[in-house]
Image 1 (cartoon, helix red, strand yellow):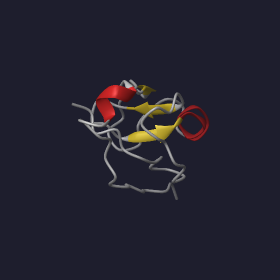
Image 2 (image 1 turned 90 degrees about the horizontal axis):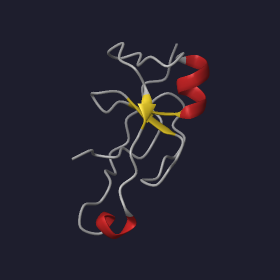
Image 3 (image 1 turned 90 degrees about the vertical axis):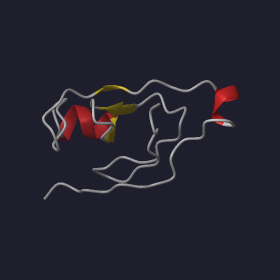
Length: 77
């Protein structure tokens, strides 16, 4: 199950579980669409993988399977 991380690793923007503009790679590195498209050119800076739209968990499932609250931040130099 995806952890649904709560923020962009690059700019620390909040990305709630239902965010349509969240992007992830196959390792679940998480970025906002603005960073993914502009700064990162669609590639994860951690693994080089493709950044794609993060699936959204149905609201009725979030109560039983909540999103992660652990924030990860690795700003680009």
